[in-house]
Length: 156
Ligand SMILES: [Zn+2]
Ligand SMILES: [Zn+2]
Image (cartoon, rainbow, N blue to C red):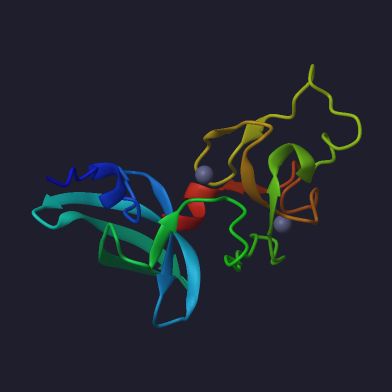
């Protein structure tokens, strides 16, 4: 008798929970974006996810299977993802580790005084190692304390 190892069977399947971030491919726009699981359905053929994402300012909801090639695990530095996020000051924002965005890490890591702050969109606190979208203009008249938004705010 062949012993089926269930872990082999689900190798290609991606396990996500409600609220998780992931990367999702838009067939319409031919690009990867960040998405968020808004529903998990478990059926006989595996798990299905409803993924919410935003593309060109439109909110989209898509149902995908857990073995679907159009989703993959969340990686904040996913090199296929280039979001065009425009800061309220009109500048294109760039993806950065929060602490590096303001030059706090690098050659001399200041472990004792980690850069922390909050997302300028949702107010969530940001850790030094968190990946954010950062306004390269930093301090301007429009945002005197810099402008950073968390990845979640790029999705929802
Ligand atoms: Zn700005
Ligand atoms: Zn946020």
